[in-house]
Image (tube, rainbow, N blue to C red; front, side, top):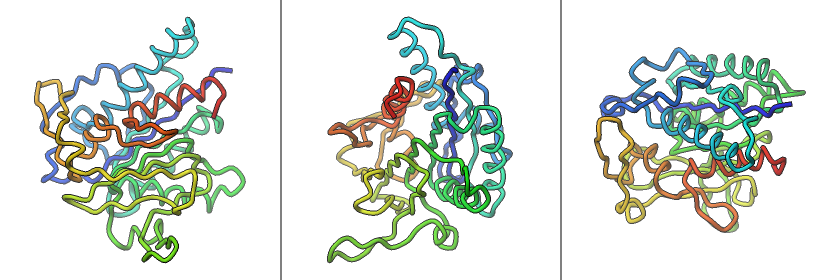
Length: 277
């Protein structure tokens, strides 16, 4: 039976100061994938959002590389479903994501490989949706095989339900996101220079959780240049550049190495196809 992938992308809130919609991408690679667009996503975001572009490009590259490596054509774009949404204030995005994941489970099955790419408010809304699943589907809640939580932030009320203060030894406790039991691997990537102060993820001794703090010296030598209009963005360690940073700067530590989010996705997708996860 062919193996399937469900990739959920939850953007942060669309803020005018973020200027995310200024530069377009060549989204032709995304046209062949099956996609569920949640209603919170605007039309311009569908072609001007870094995560939508980077994740569709990554899955396209993975399919081609896997088929070439093993000299087969078994893996196709129809084996990948994208759920594309955006975090918001209120429960609208959570309700939409909940219904989309139910549809994904019906059509792609509970044994598909579930990947979540979440940023800012999208982190909190995704975790709150997971809480809803655990309450309503206690026997077989939808889980995440791989989750990226990028500079997660929201209102204090929203964060309260998905975070807590964890202590480590004699150190003062810090608030971190609670990673549900049905998440197999979680990568928290945050910055500490400008914008919102995103939360790290999980207990200090939780082997599922891997955290990385982006600092300016690590990003200053990189430039993001994937826009179709030729624009190049210097990568300042700020909340508003994190989507470009995680696609360009190695910031996922695993197995003694550091990967970009794109590389980490392909690494675990390959292991899933080989039955090693």
